[in-house]
Length: 163
Image (tube, rainbow, N blue to C red; front, side, top):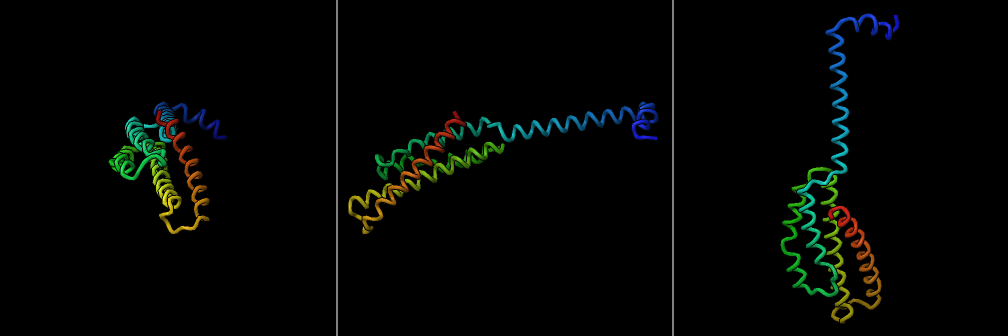
């Protein structure tokens, strides 16, 4: 006897067994659909808490841009409270997309701080306050421009995702 015939003749005649098999099929179907929904939500859903925390951090990091025009005291005043906002963004991260947003915000901040030190080093070199050779000025300018390009990319991505 083939499996198909066995299922048709023997198993489907018994109502309790038929109910169990149908129930098992429904449970498996619900689990498959539920895991699919969970997967999609985890990768594509940005929770409201992370969106709000991310917007606050992004606005504060954006205020740190144009470092050529900002002095150290102003930069430190604008940067005040940023670690707490980043911590809030990290704690409100729930889905994988939330965690990705937090990582991008953190990288954006690190790039801004790296550019800050490069810009201030450049100002010192140009003012002659540093013992660095004039050959160091050009590579430092290239570093600043590369960091600016990376910052623009992060700013664009973050604004696109959070606005």
